[in-house]
Amino acid sequence: MFVTIAKKEVIGTVDIDGIFGPTETVIIADETTNPTICAADLIAQAEHDELASPILLTTSRSLAENVKKELAKQITNLKKQTIIEKSLENQGLIALVQNVSEAITLANEIAPEHLCLLVKTPEIYLNKIKNAGGIFVGEYSPEVLGDYIAGPSHVMPTGGTARYRSCLGVYDFIKSTPIVKITRSGYQDLAKTAEIIANAEGLTAHASALSIRKILKK
Image (tube, rainbow, N blue to C red):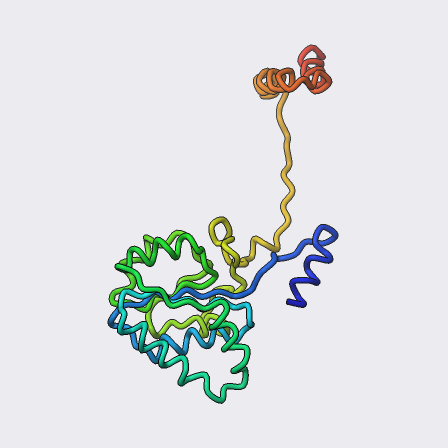
């Protein structure tokens, strides 16, 4: 929270990587998912912040019930138990859906920072996911590994911004300057179109700066 406030103070004076957080995870699970692992991943997300959003979308009522039991069991004696409990209570969700496709439709609407596919043959659903900061495929690709060591940048879009932006990358730190150099002959063709646009906007000085060059000699 303090980092976000600091960024908001300096944005415009200097560039920043973006405003990120609170953190979010959507887990899509089916009847093949291990409830112990699923609950552990939700708790790990909840541990970040009371405002963190640990969300489970599942096709299995049995899994939903078992995950709920596991959540109650696993948070006992954890260092940040109070934070975890508040996150789960206020921001957490376990939702039952008809099928994995419906879960993906919902996930695309949420556009979460992290989307975890804990389903049978998760690879077949990858091309259906349009909005997610990062996708974690299978029980052995947990978001927690992404936090520390998996490889891709873990500065990922939050708050639904995954609809239009990607995780932080090299190009976010590169400043570019375009250079325009047009020949006299090339100018003659381009200026005609530009002059039409300038006049249409009512910017007659713009149009004049274009037309005056066409009548000048070399």
